[in-house]
Every structure is written in C-alpha cells, then in structure tokens.
Image 1 (cartoon, rainbow, N blue to C red):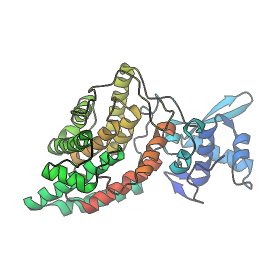
Image 2: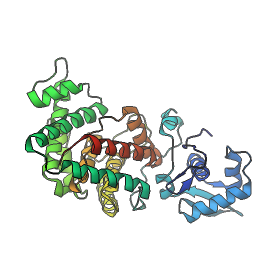
Image 3: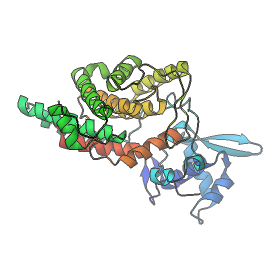
Image 4: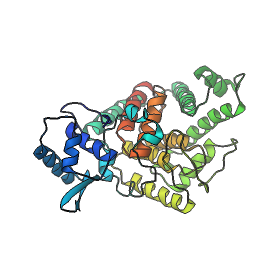
Length: 361
C-alpha cells in the first residue's frame, strides 16, 4: 500500500492517532477487511495483532469505522465520519492516474446527512476565532477612503485568483486595469474579462446583501451562480444533464430531482455546523461535490463561502496565496474519498492570510 495518509509519528489530528489514520487509509483503499488482513498491511512490522484489534475497537467507539459480522469473523469498513477525517496526502493520492486510484466513483448519498456537526477541532476553532477578533478590531472605524481602497484591493485579488484557478490567463495587473480602468488586456478572449467582471459583481452583491447568506439555500445559491456566469453562455438553474470532473472518475448526480435533494441536504448540513468557519468550509466543499450547475460550480462555491463568512462578520478569502495545484488536489480528495483534511488546511491558511492582510468590513 502506498502511504496515502499523512504519516507523522505520534501525531493526533481530530482525535485520531497516526496509527488509526493508517488503518483508515488501508480500509479506504480496500474494504471490507478483517483485523488480520489490516494487520498484514500495516507498515510497522512490530505492531501486534492484539494492538491492531485494540485500535479497531477504539475506531468503532469513535464512530470512524463500522464493524459487521463476516462469516465467523468481523469485517470493518470506514464510516462517513471516518472518511471526513481521514488524513490523506492529497499530492501523493492525486499523483496516481485517475483510473488507478481507489476512490469512490459514485455520489455518496449519506455524506451530508451523516456529516459531523463539528468538522474543525477546538484548537482550529480557537485559532480562527482569535484571527477574527484581531480582524474585527483592525477594521473598526476605518476612514471611508481607506475602506473603499481596501475593498477594491480585495475584489481585484479575489477576482484574479479565483479566475486563475479556473484557467483564466489574466495577470494580477491585467485584472487591476480591467476592474479599475475598464480596459481589457490585449490578446485575451473577452470571456476571460467577463469572468473577472462577474466575480466583482458577485462579491459586491454578497458584500452588500450579507445577511441573506447566513446559511446556504437553493435560492441564494442559484442567485449567486447566475451573477457569476452572466453573459458566458452558461445555463442558469440546476443542471438537467450529466457532467464530468476533469482528472477524476467521480461522477456527480445526473438526475435534476436528486440534485435538488442534494442541495437541500447540503443546506441542512451547513445549517447544523456550529461555527461560521465550518458553515463556509462545508458550503465550499459541498457545492463542488454536488456540481449542481452545468458550469461555474467552483466559482460559486468560493463566493458562497465568502458570503457566509461576511454574514457572520468574518474575514472574506481572496485565495491570493493559495497554490493552485494543491487546491485542485484537495478538492479531488473530497470528490473521491470525502476527506476534508487536505482542504481544511488550505481553508485555515487562507483565512489567517485574509484576516492579517485585508481590512474589509
């Protein structure tokens, strides 16, 4: 087995030890398995079968795996909670060709219904909360001129980076000229300019109407998507045809009625989240997973996450410093394995960057 989990000796993440993470990775790759089969696949040759059985009992108690009778023995599979908190190494996992990876190819109907209410640890919540307190203090009583300039800067950097993640070739300076001087860059397709202009309009809308986005629902999701794909030849409303995911064998839902139910399930799961950060993180990942529209899903997910953060007085994200490959790999891991761990790190890093570098109210 390739070491797909983040193997840090003695490390505990989300209450899960590195040994338990290795067991989760083994089961994700090939399940169901009995304890002896799991033991034979462990990289630590000195670990005993008794130790593995004890770890399996702990994982069952934590609701991270499921035990079921298989003949005269017990076989184990990973639960939704186990998938969510599996510490997968996204780069190593995505380095394998799509049709050789072991991830799920079909939509997981249990994902949003079984999503834990807390997807951030207490320590992660504390770090984000401290950053928000400092951010709120910093943005209080801003002079109007500075507030206007800071809002312009955030919109420029968000519009540039979010579009760049989608393959847009505008530079940051091209984006600045487009948004401030209304000048399109020479040698670029007009659609690239339109994508960036739509980002500006979408962020302006959510910034002005933040209280409409304290949670996600079908109405505000479709409204935000319509702004982001305006004049780009993309149909609005929930899609009625199948879509594929580049670089993945994961197949999103095809039936519009199931997509509608998926949006409702995601909305309910976001509503159950205990903090604005978790609401925003799940909304971002969940929209990507559902792929509810024929195009523009990732853009909509990023702006929806910002809308939720703004609705609760938190810092909006620009993603300016994000590595685009790491971003895509983390999303692919959520598609195929339902693990939030790789993207959670990106989200936290980008939130801390935003709270430190922007002063937008």
